[in-house]
Image (cartoon, rainbow, N blue to C red; front, side, top):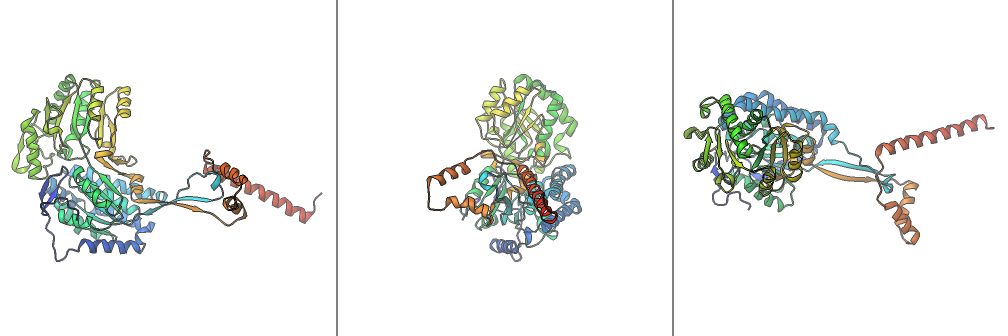
Length: 528
C-alpha cells in the first residue's frame, strides 16, 4: 500500500511535506469506499455519457453556475479556511476559473474535432487524422492554498475532455472541501463527478485503485509518492508542484513600480502561493533602493500595523506558522517580523544579509517572508538559479533587452514573467506547469484539454485501384524495381500542406467535370 505518511494515518502532508492533523470528519456510515467510488465512475464512463459534446458543455455551464450562484458561500468558506479577503477569492479563485470555463465553452468544438496533419507522398490518397479521446476515469487531488482555483481548474479541463472524475479536495481547507462535497455535487452529474473527502488514509486508499489519469497539485515530496503509486498501473500523471521561484531585480528599473509588483506577488494570500516570489537576487546598491520603496508600499497596502490588516490572510496551520517564525527568529529582519501567534497572522517580512545555506533558503518558504540574496551581476544571478532545482516560475525585472534575453536563454523554469509577478498564470492561452523538481505536465486553455485527452492516430485507406497500386509494391515476390519505387515513395520530403491538397483536389475535380461535360456534349450534339 502506498502511504503518504507511513507513521500516522491520522495526519496529512502539506505543500512543504509537513504533517498536520486530519481536520475533516468523515461520516463512515454514509461514505462510499474508494473501490465503490471508482467503480461508479468507471461504469459511468463505460456508458459513453461523458463523451457527448453537449453533455460536456452542459456540465461546464453547471460548473459556471455553481461559481456564480454560490459565490457568497465560496467566499465564506475561504475566509474560514484562510481568512482570505473577498477580493482575492472573487478575482484570484472564482473569476480565473470562470474565465477558463467561458474560454473552453467557446473553443470546445474546435478542440474536440479530429485534426488533419499534413500528408507525405505515401499517404496522399489516405485519410490521416488525430482523434482526441478522453482517458477515462480521472483522479484529481486538489491543494489547500487556492482550494477553488487549483481544484476546479483541473476539473473543468477533465470535463471538457470527456472524462469522469473523482475529486479529492485538500482536508487542510475543510470548509471549502465540505462545500465542494455537499453543494457542487448538486450541480454536476452524480455518477460522472464524485467528491471523496478525507486525509492521508483516504488518499492512500484512492491511490490503491486503478485510474486512467492522475492530476496532483501539492509538494514535491508528496508528488514523488503520487508518481510512484501511479507507476504501479502505468497511469499517466500531471504533477503541479512548487519550489523556490526567484526574482532577479536589475538596477535600471522603475524601482517604485518594481517593488510594488514584487510585494504584491509575495504577499497575496500571505505568500501561500506556489508561484509566489520566493527570494530576491540583486546587488547591495539595488537592495537599498528596494527596501526604501518596499517600506512605503507596505504601509500604503496594509497600514502602520500590517499584521492586523484585513487584507492579510492567515497562515493555514499552527505547525506551518511555527516553521515560518523559525525563519524570522534566526535571520536578519529588515522590515516586518511582527506577528499574532494565536491568530496565525504574520506581517510581511523582508530579510537581508541572507546566506545561501541559511534555513530560509533550504526549502520553499510558502509565507509572507522575502529573503534578499546579494549578487554582483546578472552572471552571478544566473549561476545561482542554475545551481538549484528548476523553479516553477522565474521573475525578471529589467529594462535591458539583452539581460532579459540572456536570462531567458540560459535558465530553465516552468514559466517566466518579465517586469511583473504571478500574472502569467491568468493568461489562459499560456500553459501553466513545472519542469524537473517543480513538476511535469501543464494545463490552462487548450493545453488543459490536451492534458486530459489521448491523441489517437487514425489512418483510413480505401479499396480503390489507385490505393491498391501503391500497396502492391510491398507484397512478394520482391525485386529491385520495388525497392527503388518504395525508397522513392518513403523518402522524407517536406509535407504537403492540406490547403494545397484541397485546392489540387478542387482543380482536378473541376478539370475532370469540364472534360466530362465536353464529352457528353459531343455525344449529344456531335463533334466536329
